[in-house]
Image (cartoon, rainbow, N blue to C red):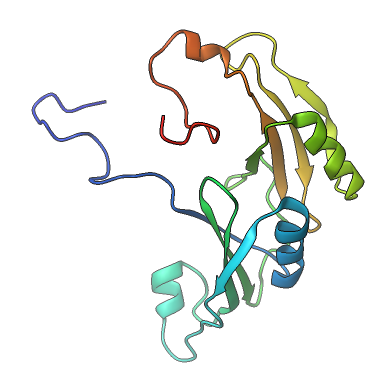
Length: 185
């Protein structure tokens, strides 16, 4: 909602979009193999180990226990859309089970593809676990969308999605959600 007393747009000044998404994995090398070899992302660079042996930098800056160790952080580019920043932590009491979508902090990453059938067959050929069957939206605001969830080797929820002819809501409004096939619109 815009503030009618100001000409300044609502929200973060200078916002351009999502630059990266960060998440923690149990094994950085396993995650790298999956995101590079199966998904098709490109590993760009590593930051290396980060720790604070005596202070509380980790707690103050990252909201993790003060003696947590980041074994490594690796950055990935996955074609169009946000970059990935993947962490591997070492810390006592770390939860090792990914949250479900219904849990606070639950999440998934959705990968848009041009040819859903081809991409779904590819995931099956790679031995990737698909959850249920594809969902095809034939009515409503997401009409035209096809999607299915799948799992990374460590259990992180991911989604395969496609809507090459757009979605139903687009016929009712000028504003559109960002679409990887039309990045500047």
